[in-house]
Image (cartoon, rainbow, N blue to C red):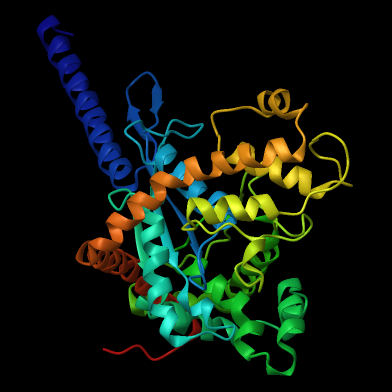
Length: 420
C-alpha cells in the first residue's frame, strides 16, 4: 500500500477516535453536573472517576413555651445550647462531613405559643410572655443573621399539619405519653384535649421543616420518638405505590416520601437543672412556688435570697453524683454550668472543704455574674420594639416558605383537592 495512503488512513482513524472521546467527555460532564453526581471522563485507554463535592443542607429546630418567666433551666438546658450549635455550625469556618461535602446548617428557633395554651393561661400575659421569650433568645446570643426566630402561631401550617397528623395517630400511642399523665393529674377533670394531643403538634412542628436534628432533653425524647413513629406511619399509608407517584406527577412534586425521621440532639450531661426545693424534680415554670427556680430576669437580690433558702442536706462536705444527695449534685451542676470555662475537677478542688454556708454565697455570685450581661441585653432589645417585631416578621416569612411547601406535599399525598 502506498505510504502516503497508509498515513491518510491512520489520520482518519485517529480523528474518529478523538471525536468519539470528545463526545463521551462532553456528554458525561453535562449529565454529572446536572445531577451533582460522579463525573466520568472517558479516554481511549482508561476511565477515571472524580467525585464532585456537594453542599448538604440540614435544619435544626427547637422552641420553648412562653408561659411564665424563662428560668435558669430553660436557659442552660436549651437556649444556651442553641447558641453553641449556631456558633459551631454557622460560623465562618466550613463544616465538612466524612466525605468532604460541605454542610450548610439552617437554624429555626420558635416561641411555641400554641403549646402554651394546652394548660390554663391568662390571655393578658400571653402576648407579653411571647415577646419576652423572643427577646431573651436574642439577649442570650441567638443571632438573626445566622438563625431564624419566629412565633409558632405566626405560621398557620403548624395548626393544619397537627390536625392532619392527629387523624392518623392511634390514640394508644398518645396514652403512653408520661408527661400527659403527670400534667393531667394536676388538672383533674378539667384537663383539655389539647394537652392529650400536644405531642402531635410537637411532631408537626418538627416535620414541617424536615428537621433532621432536634435538640431535646431526656424528658422530651419520648415525644421525639413519637414524631419518628408518625413519620413512618404517614409515609407507609400515603407515600407508596403508583397512585402516589401519579398524584405527585400531577402536582409536579418529587415522589420521595413527604417526611424524614428526625434525630435527637441530646443536650449535654449536667445541663438539666433541678428544682431548688427538690433536687429530684426538674426546675419548672409551672411550679407554684417561685422559690423553686431562678428566673433569668430575677434581680441579684432575689437570686441571692433564693439560693440562700434553697434546700440542702445535713451531711458534712459537698460532693457530686451521690444519688442520696440530689440537691448537692444540682447546685454543683449549676455552679459548673454558669462557669463553662472551668472543669469539674477544678470546682471540686475549690469546694471540697466548704460548708453550705460558705458555698451558697459563692454560687449566688457566679449565677448573678453570668446572668448580668443577658439581662442588660434583654433590656436593650425590649426597648427597641420595632427591631424585635422585625426579627420575628423575618423569621415568620422564612419559616412560612418552608412550612407551606411541606404542607402542600402533605395535602397531595393524602389526596386533597388542590386549589388551581
